[in-house]
Amino acid sequence: MGASAQPALLADFASSLQNFVRVFVWIYILLIFAYVLSSWIRLPYSRTASTVQQFLDDVVRPYLRLFRWLPTLGPFDLSPIVAVFTLLIGAEVVSRLIGAVL
Image (cartoon, rainbow, N blue to C red):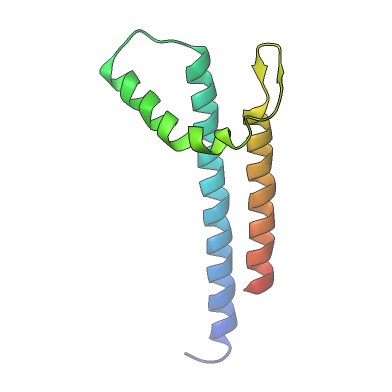
C-alpha cells in the first residue's frame, strides 16, 4: 500500500466511524420514543408486547434515569426530551472529535 493510499483509507475509516455513531444514536432515540409511547399506551397483555416492553425497559430506563432529577410539567416528564437533546449534542461532539483526531 502506497503512502498516498493511507490518508484516503484513514479518511474512509473516520467517515465510517462517524456514520456508525450517528446511526447508533438515531436508533437509540427511536428506542426512547418507543419507550415513551409504550408508557402512554397500554396494550392488552400479550407475551410479545411484554417482551418488547421489557427490552425497552432494560435498554432505555438506565439512561433516562440519569435525567429523572428534572421537574415535571404537570403530567409531562421532560427527562426524555433532555435525554434526546443530550444524545444529539453528544453524537455531534464525538463525530467532530473523530474527524479531528483521524
